Picture 1 (tube, one colour):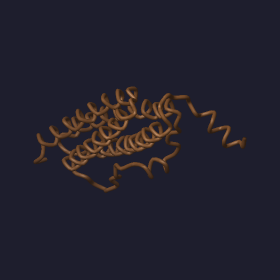
Picture 2 (picture 1 turned 60 degrees about the horizontal axis):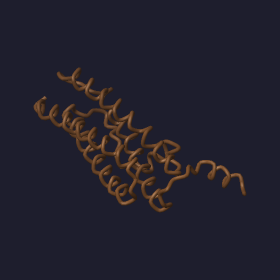
Picture 3 (picture 1 turned 30 degrees about the horizontal axis):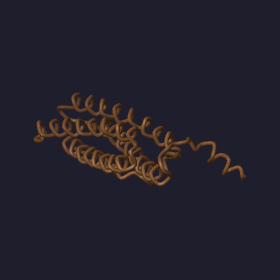
Picture 4 (picture 1 turned 90 degrees about the horizontal axis):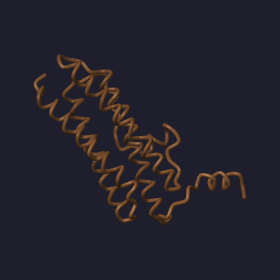
Length: 171
């Protein structure tokens, strides 16, 4: 056995899921974790660059949402390991898999920030639902249960961002 093969077998946590199901779920989780990292950075970017008359409210809202997003990353990455799969290893790996797009603009209006985060969180919830279906097919209740909670969190973020943006659309 070569050194690489030994290392890979050392990371192969046993699971009763088929290799095909574990791979499908693991690949989907990697994309979601990458999306969460990208969404976390974007949320913090907007938090740091918020301006305008509702600065404090939006700044605090995005800080809370960033903390919530960050808290979802580790359980999902660790879930992948519980399924005997590797998970993300680098910023480059995240960049290759993330569907959430960066926003490096010098200035983004508060309204546009909120709307962009609404769309990103909606897309994240949709991706989690697709992954939940994969879990249902594999009878992977552990991953499905995590996703149910995180789908609800993403929908709550959408609701708060949408309402904040609607309330102050003229700012």
